[in-house]
Image (cartoon, rainbow, N blue to C red; front, top):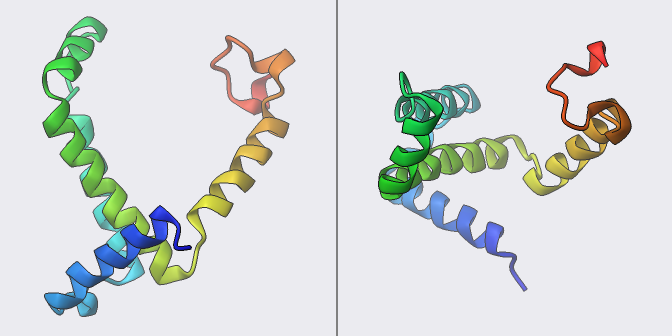
Amino acid sequence: MMHELDRLIKQIKQFRDERDWKQFHTHKDMALSVMLEAAELAEHFQWKTKEEAEEYAKTHKTEIGEEVADVAVYLLEFCDILGIDLIAATKDKLAKNAAKYPVEKAKGNAKKYTEL
C-alpha cells in the first residue's frame, strides 16, 4: 500500500511533469526555492510582537498554510531528486538531536548543545 507521503510526491511530480518543468527543477533550484518560500512564510510574522504574531496566526491560517505548503512541495521534490527518504532522515536527525540535547541538560534551556 502506497504511503500518503509517496502519493503526495507522485502528485507533485505529475504537476511538474505536465508542465515540462523538470528541466528547471535541479537540486540547487529546489534548495533555493525552499529558502525563498520559507522567507515568505517568515514575512507573515516580521515586525510583529509575540502577541501580534499569535493573533495574526489565528486570523491568517489559510495564507500561512499556503506558504507552508509551498515549502513542503519544494522540500519533497528536493528530497525526491536527491533520493533522500525524508522520514528516515528526520528520524535519524531526531535520534542525533536526542543525543546532543539530553533531557536532563536541555529541558527548558535554549542553549546550543555545545554550551550545555
